[in-house]
Amino acid sequence: MAVKVCKFGGTSMADGNIINGVKNIIESDAERRYVVVSAPGKRYSGDVKVTDLLYACHCELVKSGSCAAGFAPVRARFESIVKELNIDFDVKSVLDETEKRIDEEKSEDFTASRGEYLCARVVAEVLGAKFIDAEKVIFFRADGSLDGEKSYKAIRNALSGVERAVFPGFYGSGADGRVKTFSRGGSDISGAVVARAVNASLYENWTDVSGFLACDPRIVDSPRRIKIISYKELRELSYMGANVLHSESIFPVRKANIPIRIKNTFRPQDEGTEIVPSSRYIPSGCTVTGIAGKKNFTVIFIEKSLMNSEVGFIAKVLEVLAGENIPIEHIPSGIDTMSLVISSEQLEDSKLSRVLDGIKKAVEPDVVRVIENIALIATVGHGMSSSVGTSARLFNAIASADINIKMIDQGSSELNIIVGVNNDDYEKCISAIYCEFFNK
Ligand code: ASP
Image (cartoon, rainbow, N blue to C red; front, side):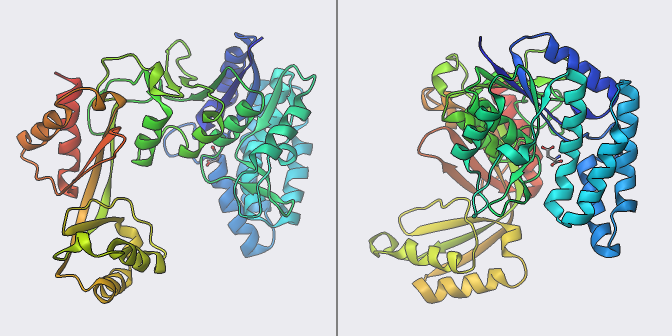
């Protein structure tokens, strides 16, 4: 029988009633055998996520030497969840033991991971499933990266003969044997690792939205939902700020061609968005899949006559940036010009002037100019490469909205076209592109 791995996010774990709804979801499909959970999230706006309470708890521990006061709200949260669930589970002993270990370990990662740990203990109890501690089955290398092969093997061993299991997301064991977390939102990665380990037929990622929207709903009112999207398109959109899924969570499942489906715990009947391994699975006729963007970039424009024939010119410029440890987002270039597009926060303090001095010394350019407050907007879709006139439509839409384009970058995969506009034009530009491709 096919196996599905289901990851439930923080809002799906927020209180006992919701967790009961999750139980129904899991039990309504016999293939949903392995579950990965986040720590309980916000119950209402203004509430605090358990993981945030735990980070505050760690600060308290560092300050006062004891985690008791910081742990109290976490304790209260889990006590109320267990009460709402009305299960026979000795939550007090588990909380006492957790608090003791937080005091002993004195580690930020360990403390932060306890939201997932406690939540998975509770959910395992609710489902009558086996609890498998991520500490024993998810491993990181000394450089902090995920040790996939070692983790997949350990997960498979732990699951042998197990009908249903619950894993805490977000953490595993570091190379030093101590608990280590992924970056924030990392339970998505844990879910993908488990899905890969068991070669799941589907990785279901349960959230509080019915899938990805074609653009930010704060900018366009009720944008269209994306029914199907490829891993590559998703990577582009999430890199540009569309946040439903942790952008690294794609990698473990991608290699094994496992599709991901984003589902809504609060509207399980909704189809959600399916993320598929390649554009082959996407029906033809979809030109643009989605639009996403980010504000606050700086463009360093460099001009020098005969730049194209000067061997090593770009390498010398890049060396200056590497020397300052600054990542570059894009490098649009012309015959005698090149631009570096860099996130403005990377150039704070005196870094920008050091970079400019460095470039002047390294390549003696004719002109170096800095353009600040730039927003980048990516229009993404596999269909763009095969439909003639897509860029004409895009640029026309932007021009009709009276927006000046400061930069254009089309990836050679023709998967996206990125435009740079003034920060102030960001929202207007996204609306104009959306209207052109989705609302006509
Ligand atoms: N609980 C962690 C966080 O808030 C991880 C997760 O939810 O995926 O970032």
